[in-house]
Length: 174
Image (cartoon, rainbow, N blue to C red; front, top):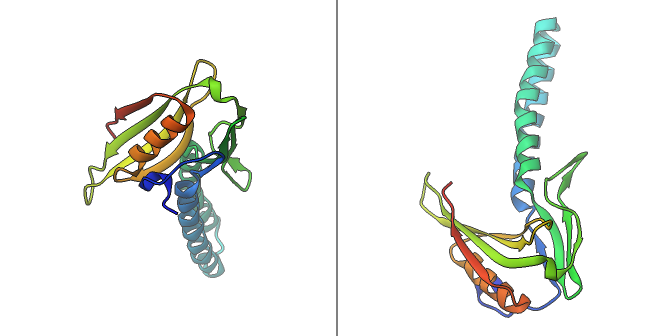
């Protein structure tokens, strides 16, 4: 079966998971911290001075804190869109949780499907999109997908058709 972002049919319930980017960052962060732990253990085994201990702690913090902040800010979540509403659970890692909304929201609380499109300006040029259910006043926007190419646009159109919502396309400058 062809997925909706590639032009296939879309039906309810529709499961979504936008945690992949956050998971990738956390995996990289854990790898860096593990390497730092090994280097720090060797350093402390050869020189157990206060300055060595402080250096290892400082370096670990300088790497971990920004990584955690990026993870929290990314807003990845998982959930499902069904006839009775949209259920969302923010992504989590240890005691940290993303800034994505949590709960169940009735479908009539959303005013449109918004497709935000941007192009990378570094490395090899590529286009990517984020697809949101745009909440009406008092209802948060829910990130449904992060895609590349035109898959997000196709998913947004299919989702808008299925939910009887207009589709907004927005060009973002990143």
